[in-house]
Length: 112
Length: 117
Image (cartoon, rainbow over all chains, first blue to last red):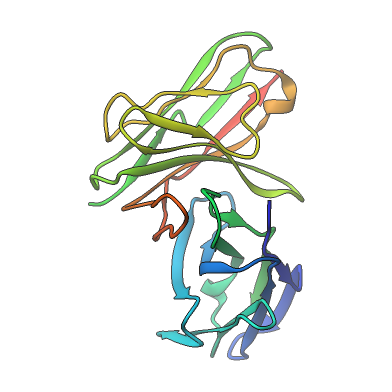
């Protein structure tokens, strides 16, 4: 099944800096979602962007979607230590009855 | 408070001893799903259910069973657990999952860490 792949696998930044994570996928989608996971905890939904949208904002989060390149990016501005977590993209395919497929995640560390 | 509740949160068991991980949601969601999370492999879907009495296999269904007799509950059953089922398991629910695509926001439980010796 198709899978979103996040890049980089790990990212370490200083507090106050911006963090950018990328997700690439293989086939056409209905929507793409980003989730956050604190160590060992359940995933929390951050934002959903539909295939006909190009950009979406939620607080300090900005998500872009480029369907021609089959890629998305998640930008966290003015990062805080509390943003330290793993971030996953998940794609909802535009064919058949396929499940929401998660990538392997980007591990973000924000150093105070 | 809207939530997905899984039990047990932690379990150590032995090979072959049947166990059930319960999952309950209080949001009246139609769609429910089970995932396992393993290092380096991300989240993989085990089974999902689009509504009561409707279940279907995900990517890694072998060794698992599920049932959906009520809308709020979606238990995961391991009839004869083996060590390769040692993993972190998550239940999730969503308002809808239409045939042909379009999954809405998933709400996740806190996870159940299972160790099979």
